[in-house]
Amino acid sequence: MNQEGNYITEEKRQALEVELKDLKGPKRKEILEALAYAKSLGDLSENAEYHQTREDQGKLEERISKIEQILQSAQVVSGGGGDTVEIGSKVVVQKEGTKEDRAYIIVGSEEADMQGGKISNRSPFGAAIFHKKKGETVSFQTPKGVVNYKIISVA
Image (cartoon, rainbow, N blue to C red; front, side, top):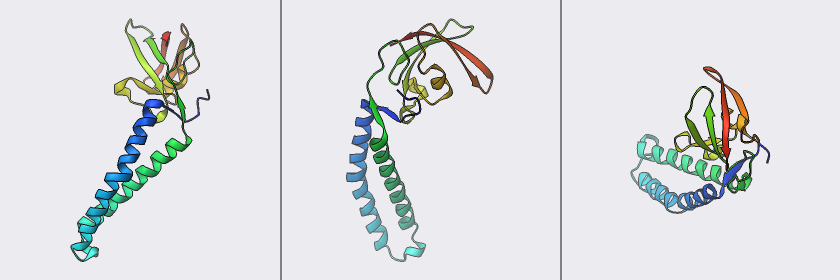
C-alpha cells in the first residue's frame, strides 16, 4: 500500500455517497427555491438575500464537486489486520517515558479525526508509524521537539 495514495474506508465511502445524494437532491432543491424567492424580492444589485443564496449555492456545488472527486480518485480499503501498520490498522502505542497506552486507527486524510482517535497516514505521526511492526520504536518531529513512541500492538 502506497503511503501517498488517497484512501478511504468503506464506511467513509458510504457516508460520502449519502451526503452526495442529500446535497444533489433536497439541499440543491432548497437552494434553488431560496434563489427563486430572493429573485422575486426585486432589485438584485442590492438584494442581500439573493447574494447570500448565490454564495450558499456556490459552496454547495463546490462540496458536491469535492465529494465526487474523492469518490472517483480514492481507493477503498478494508480494516488493517496483519502485523504491519497500514490504512485501517488499529495501533496501540506508548510514548517514551510514560506508561499510558493510546490507541489510534490509521485512516486516509479525508477521514482524520483526532478526537475520534483516527490519525491520517499523511500526518507526521501517521507517516512515522506507517509500515512499521509491533515492538518497533518510531520518532517524529513535533513543535516541541522529537517524540518517540513504541508500537505495542497492531490489529
